[in-house]
Amino acid sequence: MLSNDLDAYWMPFTDNRSFKADPRLLVSADGMYYGTQAGTKILDATAGLWCSNAGHNRKSITEAIQRQAAEMDYAPNFQLGHPLSFAMASRVSEMLPDGMDHVFFANSGSEAVDSALKIALAYHRAKGDAARTRFVGRERGYHGTNFGGISVGGIVNNRKHFGPLLPGVDHLPHTLNIEQAGFTRGQPEWGAHLAEELERIVSLHGAETIAAVIVEPIAGSTGVLIPPKGYLERLRVITKKHGILLIFDEVITAFGRLGRGTAADFFGVTPDLITMAKGITNATVPMGAVGVSNEIYSTVTNAAGFGIELFHGYTYSGHPLACAAGLASLNLYRDEGLYERASAMAPYLEEAVHSLVDAKHVIDIRNLGLVAGIELSARDGEPGRRAMNVFHDCFDNGLLIRVTGDIIALSPPLIIEKSQIDFAVDRLREVLARTQ
Image (tube, rainbow, N blue to C red; front, side):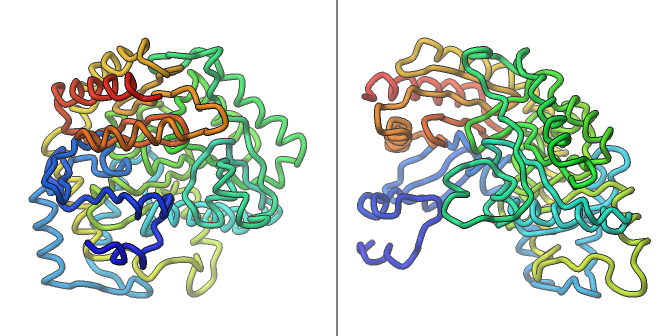
């Protein structure tokens, strides 16, 4: 490729100048591997971006998309419908907690989050609680990059460049404490008390002003923050006590990452709304979704007079190709028992990543399900530089990882083999040993 072939595309979340000076391009994908222009195979230890849960180039999904494109490429979903969107909503609702039988479609995790926030506001207004407009997010939370998502999110660089954002948003403290709970396998024993900070926020603003609390069961994009034992349960108790909705952002955790359909199922905590995306179509066609409790759905729809009940939606909500991909993905997860496989492989991944406890620069390791975070010490005055060097070195030597700040995140496809876990961990150890 000529250098100017790269100029037109303003790449997201990328150091564009550095990348275009030394590009690393993927040109093919199959199973557990990407392929480069040079023909090198790259083991995908991150499922793309937490999303290709069944691996790449799965024939049944590809064929479903092709068939649907040939039969009907697009259909509007405003005052009309097509069968696949209803079938997909039914299939998704089957995996949601009891009492959550409704699904609203979007096109990404970011859109799913903004949809959930708007649904929460619509619910309280329909109940006559229009004063409930405030949201509570969490420090180091990631909820996409739309204005609602970055407002309730807690990543400084995602927020500080874009003005005041949504008014009336507060944040809980994050739950990571390496000093108290470093190198924890699974859920930390320390930290459930941090949920009590919600009571302080309630006392500050008044429960009658708060619409919803939104948290990721596992905060992925900020470096794999595992919830302490009892933390999510306590949030559920406090929100119910004050009539506040609880939203689980499961864009990463839904569809098998923890060996279950949802983290709500894994942790045994039922929220009022669940946002989903990524694995919903195995990342083949963009799609997002919001699981909605029966109480919220019936309250909003029954409160409306004639006509539209929720003034919200997207041109591509429930897109036929996305629905075809989603149904094929759900069938594949079921037919190959991939959730159960993830659960069975999780202990092996845990042992493997924790073997890096003595690796150079490693200051913490944390894991749950098929997710692991390996935190590195930062270089003085250059936060994130060490991990980015590791990222590049790993890629150049056949391994794709994800880095955020100085944290390495692993979230492999659910089809990963033990030998591939061994390869990933051995390669990481080698790269860390030569990293300055």
